[in-house]
Length: 100
Image (cartoon, rainbow, N blue to C red; front, side, top):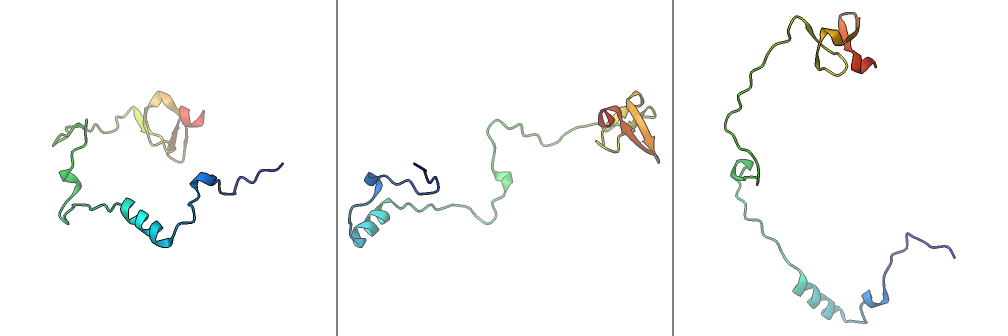
């Protein structure tokens, strides 16, 4: 026998008995919960702290420019040492990993 998997699966016990409309509405109103969000218009993400997050005011990173023996691959845009150079076309350099 073929099974229609798109057909809703409703068990007979899930079907409501012939209840009146008033009884169904009363049941819905008693189980319905309204959620109230207490947020002000001035609240921003700065007011929330994530658990386990490392919050530092300032990051100190030293940026080193590309050295003479390095190049930037035009495929992956990573900086590689010149020994990783696979080919150069019209001044565009490509690394061994991208050409592999």
